[in-house]
Image 1 (cartoon, protein in one colour):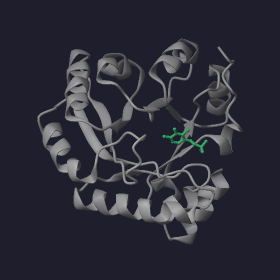
Image 2 (cartoon, helix red, strand yellow):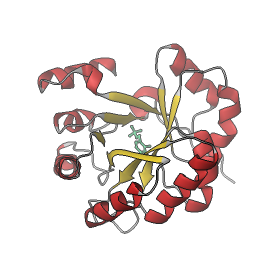
Image 3 (spheres, helix red, strand yellow):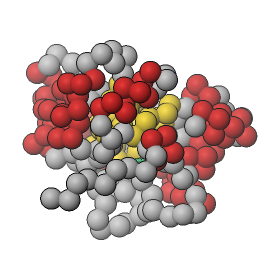
Length: 218
Ligand SMILES: *Cc1c(COP(=O)(O)O)cnc(C)c1O
């Protein structure tokens, strides 16, 4: 993985240290995060608040780890999300922004947030419309305990990474337009394309941990 990121960065004249690798550990047990930590990974991405709440106690010894929520967050789970995660990459409503502000404030903390943007128009996906970003940043301006640092997106799944390029380019343009420094885009299949288009965070699961285990059928 290091090599893929390094080579992609080199190819487009970017520095490796300007790109953060977030290891997506959803569906894997806490032991797998601990192993990844031992080989040097420090940033982890999880999709489900409940799943991570169950793993978190087993990770107490990973003192330098940072955790990103990369799955949809319901505003009634803002409080627990603030306890578990340092960065919420999936803020897509003012209501959620306000809830996070309250929850972080109660803890005397500031939480990092990124705005998830829906660029594909797929009904099933969460994320804010590009036209809503300005209003969300307005809401953030009155949220002293939330620090919005960037944008995140997930293009429609495709085997061909070139299909993602247009979405990545669009997200980069929106981040520039709104003066946001961070761009979370690119996964196992398209991280090189994302880096070429300016990603500062890539979220990689399968290429690091292998195929995700199927949950036991209920
Ligand atoms: C699962 C997931 C990833 C990682 O996907 P891989 O293809 O396994 O690298 C990245 N981002 C989000 C939002 C995810 O849900």
